[in-house]
Image (cartoon, rainbow, N blue to C red; front, top):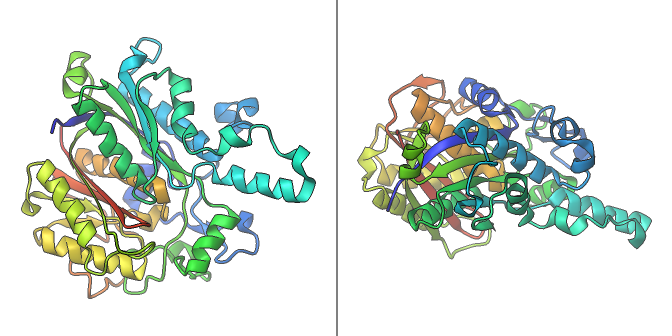
Length: 404
């Protein structure tokens, strides 16, 4: 399979607005979880929100009224990625530009708010923009309209694997010569009372209310659940020959992709990690690599007791003992459908800059996690890395990224 060149990166995350702000926070291992007054009485009362995001100032007040927060995040990330890639949409052949984005919840905030309006104020107070604001496909639709991308346009939804799935699908479009350029990534804005209540009722969230900043602690022996986050990540992917022809700076390459289904349980991973392992091995095979070739893994690492232990067992079976492992969710929380895209950006930066970000809040590593989990920022040469994403429904996706 043909590699895809990564020529642009864009981020809007709890760690900051923009790639450099987000990377600095992640590299330093500073947790972003804090009390969230917008959750009201919904426990656990904290989340990882994008800081100081002013949609009115960034996108225009009139426009923001018609855009769910998830679309606002994605538009900002896509704009940064295109600028980073040195692409001017007014000059490109839009028919050769695709958009593939992922999300788990789509316009969840809009749907929740408008339902409350219906119940409280009646039918005539429901916004006429409800449907185009909450439909998941509008992430890609709005990006296409913003930048004149008239090629293949779609949204994928594989729960918390959505962002990684989007990158894999985008790479396939490039390899099949359907596009020269694809904006690939994902967005999520499910830090709403109803969505958080749902996760809380499942018992999936940390209850560390006395110290929210220490609540997301992947692979730590005292982890007790994840922290909900929000944000978006977009990568500009190109056919290598197209990137070369225009003299683009290549920041990395997508060299492998693997996907699988556990076919086991709606919310729990297979206890032996069979589906996750199949996806990891498929990504390695696609990259023409073996487990011993992997220098680093940005793990799914949600901070739940079962997921971290199952993923660790898979990686221990597949990789060499000296592979470094980190979970940036210790900083950002779990960004759900956007996690894979954002973590792929962090993985690309790890390769490019030779710095492995730490797993925040890793105080005492779980003795059943037999991996080299990185607890401090570490300088290292990373040539080939994996970014893992596993979602509800047993949907698994893994990408292999390499240096230019």
